[in-house]
Image (cartoon, rainbow, N blue to C red; front, side, top):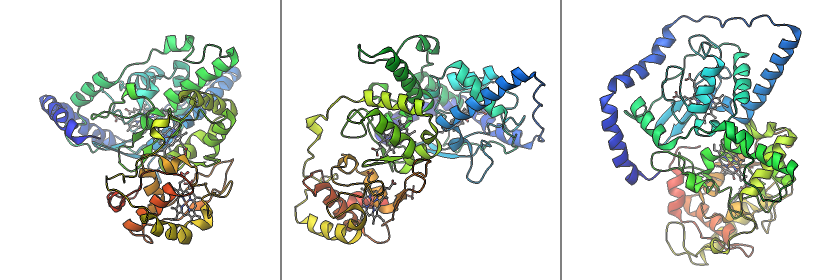
Length: 460
Ligand code: HEC
Ligand code: HEC
Ligand code: HEC
């Protein structure tokens, strides 16, 4: 986030916020009031005939599947807490926000909501009392959801055991959590999607697309843009945290400044135009394929969400991702200049230290020539994740190590050890600069300073 741009804007919002300070007070007091009310069980479901109850069960099951694709549980479950009882902390550039209790508890959860209330929250980002919801709840994407899918999600949430955990108040510096600031944000950055016409028209696709492919492509677009909320990380934001629709899919540093979600429309980053649909589907469901290994926040997306895609939905999502990127790499960004990311010119001799470190610490897994080991360790030679202009993910992986997600297709992924205690800043810079310039490849080296800034941030 660019603080210099955001400050005047934030100041403007502060003035607006001051006018309605009482709203803020009400907002902060509400959860406390809710917490003090005695717990009460949710109303029992009405008795239904066998056919109706079979329909109801199917709806709940459909909702459970959709909740996976939307990854609702990750944000709405606290570490060690009851599922969907709220409390998952989210770091935004403006402060901490917490997913709320979505169980059917009458006071603590959404037990008093009906399907229309729920649809309004998902589609318009508004609570039943008209309160504007915080956009850390990705309704900017969920607005694309169709009503029948919203109803299925609601039926599923109604089927959960009610939990009396009160939703945690957000810790946002005043006035950013105020309704005034949120309304202003919503006015600037949110459009309610037209889901009626979206259901009737097919999305973009080559004119000659076969009808069956077009249906699958439409489904893929619906999942990626809507429930999958992929844009929330992969599309850059402006200073106020609004998605820059003009720069859709162009890649973005995540709000905590630790991981970069690469561009889904650039074959040099995470664009998938050069991959087969089957391979993309495997990457989404297994978390790794060929030299692409999902790491960090993306590994979480696979762990909680995309590994559960049905084969048909994985195929549809893959088809849409394949179509997002132009066919071939653009020559312009291919060759990086011999300047470090912080602007210091690097000399070839710098790679000697890196090469030695690589042989001692990395070659046993990634191979003497960076060739990797199929199905175990990613190849580093020819790996676009290694050569990408943004180097945040490389530093994260080497400092903190990591495991891919355990999935049905890859139950026991291999791990990468952390090097934060073994290698100092200069050494991490040297080994990363080496792998970016070994085996005939060339990309800007990293400097000691690049590593230092990242090391001093709290661990992801
Ligand atoms: C990236 C994190 C994130 C994901 C993913 C997410 N939510 Fe949320 N959600 C939040 C946050 C944060 C809030 C609190 C917003 C507020 O208080 O203004 C919230 C609020 C809500 C609310 C309003 C609840 C209330 O009491 O006002 C509903 C309903 C909701 N989410 C449903 C869902 C569903 C259904 C899914 C999955 C399809 C989902 N959310 C996925 C973060 C998330
Ligand atoms: C919470 C943020 C977040 C969300 C949501 C998210 N991504 Fe990612 N994604 C990342 C980050 C960070 C990376 C870089 C780490 C990596 O390469 O695994 C990444 C990497 C990727 C890659 C490149 C993998 C590789 O190694 O080449 C693909 C493809 C991808 N994401 C697709 C998606 C799709 C499709 C969705 C929606 C279903 C999605 N992402 C949702 C953060 C996110
Ligand atoms: C014990 C085996 C092992 C060792 C030793 C090891 N790695 Fe890794 N490395 C892995 C595994 C496994 C992954 C995939 C991790 C994941 O999926 O999150 C990985 C991932 C990576 C990635 C990200 C690749 C991608 O496609 O996203 C880089 C870069 C990397 N390692 C560099 C290094 C460097 C540099 C060293 C030495 C300092 C090293 N590794 C040592 C096993 C290892």
